[in-house]
Image (cartoon, rainbow, N blue to C red; front, side, top):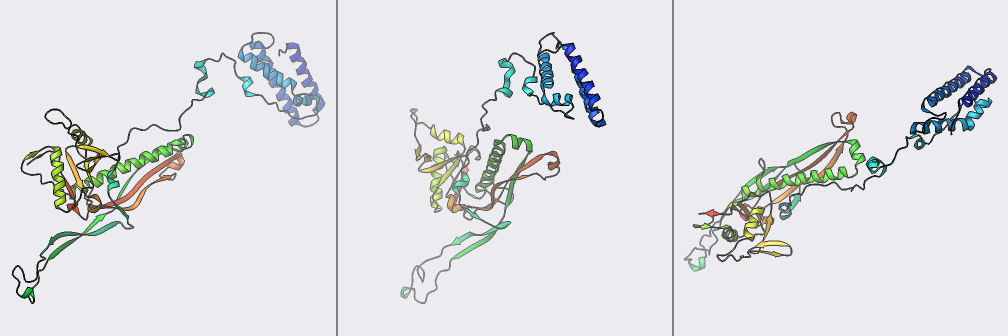
Length: 385
């Protein structure tokens, strides 16, 4: 719609005549009409510069035409001119005021056509953690735990009266055996870390808190496995408490070392429920060949579990390559859980509330007891005895 200069002048004259009619009302009403007049005049001047009165038909001209048409056709505006209203309101469809342009693929972007973004957040591959699964766990409610460890046992059991009893040993002294014990105390460890994240991110990316929580708990478990194997502070790990591999008197390869370790454990009245090896060492065992380059097939698979000499293999990056740990895990150790791994979210840490930040804390508390260290054998996979 185009409005000529004469039509604009007519509109202005109507406003002025209307002011004369309603001027007796209030100064406020008069001010409103004056303001309307100024706005219309300003629109007229801008429209003249941009060609509303018959010039170009650019996007800006189209927007101005929409505005002037909406005002002139508004029933509120007509009522104001007629003196039956003291104010007016005109609503615009914001989409009609945008500059018109060719819609190209490069200009559409995500705003107009949202990408089909997956709700999942990609994470790197995580180390498989198995050692905890081999060990029984028992809850505790203390800051430290204690257990009694048998340190020595002398078995002197024999027939009454010794090797040459008189009268079937009647009246003869009986043999005395001895046991020695030690009270062990281990402190409960707190393993924790936290992440700082903007609250807007948690609100705008629904999967973010779940991703942070999952990765944070994985970080705890990774450190937990290292502590179980290698210890921390006064909490001695399995490799620190285990009996040392005796090996034998001749040089031995990895498969021979493992078989001899199984025998050593059996002599200590233990039965290996698993052997922890580094992935490189597991590979070495699987690729062993005879002198004719034929695979030895020492590693078998049963129910999805790799085994060597019928002992389950636990492949762990937490074990240093070139070492092994063979154990009757259920008898050798137990985990004491004070607090299981959990996630807490706080908005009141430091100045986080005023900065609109959130603190995501992941924490657990546990310790490790090793009451039967002789139920484990630890050593190097290549023995040079």
